[in-house]
Image (cartoon, rainbow, N blue to C red; front, side, top):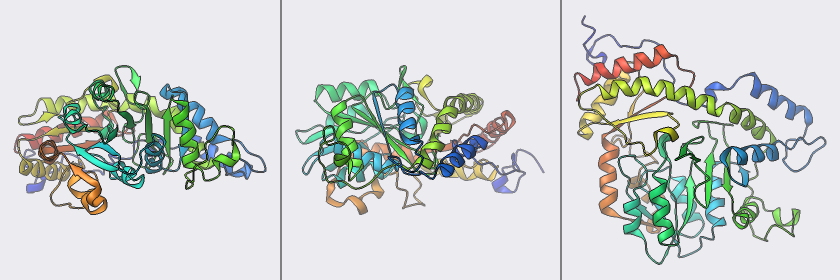
Length: 403
């Protein structure tokens, strides 16, 4: 049997073992996280503010993360969704206000706006699969108060373009860094460029505690409001500093913070390793007919947790992803018509957002075309160089037949 025959057609797959190409932070969990968690358990003080022997791990994480990001303040919360809700509220979004979001983002991004009383204006993405600054310009109106660029799949958005439009129109900027923790744009860490940043530490992310999130800012007033918005009792804890604000509870616990401190220490090493692996796979894409790499606005700032490339049609992309998966490389099309419940795609948001969602149709239709032609593969720091070389070999094999 020829080794050139695709596995999906009955040939031998390039990779016969199971590859796990997700969970970049989780796969590096080891005895360091175990020791950190055990220390908190033995303290019997799992709440961030007090206990019989408090270690104040949440505060320690907040201080270390703020230093890492390069901002004045970090507020740890229970999830990336909580971080978005808190950040949007902290910027003063209220009933009748509009917030611009990209057509490709996790559903939490637009939902956080609606939960604060605002309306969502959805605009297109460019070939980086991040928000298109030109589309923001077209969507600006007197009602628009905030724009949320989302750094999708580890890649920084064009923050130079985003910030120019935002400053020209007096818009606040919340960076959604849920999928790109550790990334940067032109030397500045993501989450320190806009008025505020948000992070997710859910299991799929570059660093994780299973769940968790953070809000970052260098604006003290935004920080004060964020503290109030994340803790129902925040005002009573420090009435001279925190404004009174009826809020739910999004406080992070000490166990999660202990894990995050260890994960943060590994983050840069993990990203450096994923960059080494991505270079190998990228060369294979560049050498394959019919494949076009995703645009990266700042190569140095890429966290390299995924590699994405486009085919000439959505039909070819779907065939390519299925064939590559059969070769032992888990791959998927970003916008797959066979999956109508994909929460990252704007066409699937209407059921939750209803009349609170306004679509910039031309740019969003262009986004659908890009997303339907995009094939994406995850990368994780525990992969061996041989694994990366086999992934590259599989891409080349499939591309010789489907391009």
